[in-house]
Amino acid sequence: MCGIIGFSGREQAAPILLDGLARMEYRGYDSAGIAVRAETCGLQVKKTKGRLQVLSTLTHGGADLEGTLGIGHTRWATHGEPNDINAHPHVSENGQIALVHNGIIENYLEIKEHLQKQGVTFTSDTDSEVVAQLLEFHYNECGSMLEAVGRVLRRIEGSYAFGIICSDYPNALIAARKDSPLILGYGENGNFIASDVTAVIKYTRDVAYMDDGEIAVVTPETIDVFDSELMPREKEHHQIDWDVSAAEKGGYAHFMFKEIMEQPEAIRKTVSPRIREGRVVLDDISLTAEYVKGISRIFVIACGSSYHVGMVSKYNWEHLLRRPVEVCLASEFRYSDPLVDESTLVLVISQSGETLDTMAAMREARRRGGRTLAIVNVVGSSIAREADDVLYTWAGPEIAVATTKAYSTQLVLMDLVGLYLADLLGTVSREEYDAVLAEMQALPEKMQRVLENFEDVQYFASRYFNHNSIFFIGRNLDYAMGLEGSLKLKEISYIHSEAYASGELKHGTISLIEPGTLVVALGTFAPLFDKAMSNVVEVKARGAEVLAVTTEMFREKMEKTANSTVVIPDTHPVLQPSLGVVPLQLFAYYVALQRGCDIDKPRNLAKSVTVE
Image 1 (cartoon, rainbow, N blue to C red):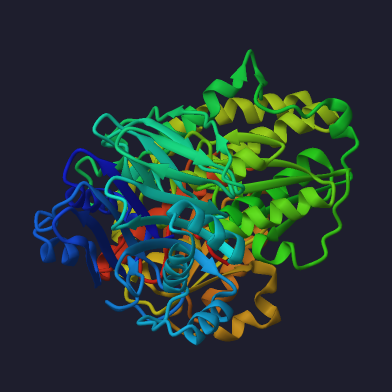
Image 2 (cartoon, rainbow, N blue to C red):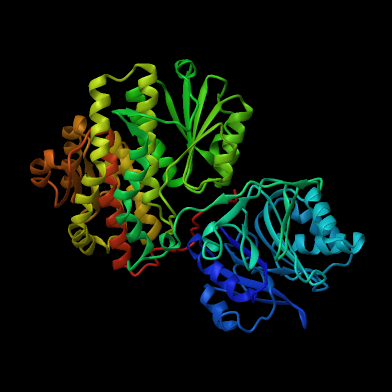
């Protein structure tokens, strides 16, 4: 959600901090700030509401701030409105300590009241400033920043990733984390902390991932890591293997369009290494046939688009595995007293691997005895490290807030896992197994054909972009696909949009259809196409304008009824949502473009949600 970067090295810090923050702009934010320590004037803090460019202009690209030690932050408001005062970094009352923070301190009011009784004056409305003032309080007691940080961590409750500098320490910054991502970067001209690897990939590929409860002391030469008892710890290093150009637009107008166009190759990278000699091979997991045959129930836990992956997978997995599959919003799962035991398999889906609700739900499932399998994109992320098994989508960095290629790779990987488990259970025929695998290997080429017809979707978007309320309807897999299409549209175009199971139209929703209402009708699921057509006729009879998505097989029938039709290639029904979602992504993109929206950074949204 928010972005953190810190640097201790042998170069001017401020330009590096601004560059790192710029590479995390996709995460979403409403204010930005940096703090740099200089020999001549101590801590220098510059922060402002708005985009990072405002801060860059204010500091002349960082040139105004001398010093080789600093921290930077982009904020997504949780406590206090977005303004200059509530922006990070926050500074202690005596001006000696500056702090940046991701997460939420749940007991901040109690601590704030205590400090106010000690005479401490607060300037912001944030929970984060409370930590800065508490640090000063304990630093004055013990005279050691490391000890003061340890005392603060034992006192606060909630989630956090901290970057801290003190004017008394000319070369060292301190970092700490719990339930909020933070990495350590080992560079030639200095060392880093960051909440996202994209912030430091320009400077180093050598990183380590901090674990909950750890504290790091970062200097130009070394990074020393300690546990919660301040005992030293060794960290495993990881090499980032994707190129920095993967996090750049590469000539495209927007990251979202670039990532839509990258989907065929992303799916190829996800699928190809996992199919050998006509079989699905998942070397990275340890689910035995004996365990799989003992599964009585399957949960899929996720948020947002990943939840919609789960909805598609529910239909496919129940068809393939003949086991009950329940899809749960992660934010609701752990508060629902879920029925999880040793015979329960829990699939956890997260692009970032740091989504706090999903991580907490996974921990609850494990506490109750369930076995967890994570589907994530980010190697070394918290969910990946804590799950019993993990499979990576290998989608590469995704920068646009609205996910596209991460969704598509999650979806196809879930299809692979479903086939793998069905094979172990003996619940899928050899004919269907072979047919799905053959079509899965053809999926990138067929998806490329859909993308080559983007101008058709662009034209339809130019016709329909001025609608203020849009409905998506479909049955079975089409309904699940419509959930994602609707979310994409509302995320980046700000149009009210809802997805409904077509069979529910007559149970209330059809009262909202009036002359001119746009209905996106999804008719790609062959077994229920005729019923889907009946619903198209119903909404047309009420005056709706119908934009349909269907397959080559049903083109002729759909074109006789719908006002406009987008046609995608035929494939196996299990895989049809992988193709069908692409025109929905393109439609959302072009509608947002027509409306002049900030496509890569939609208002109020963040890429990685690391608070409840």
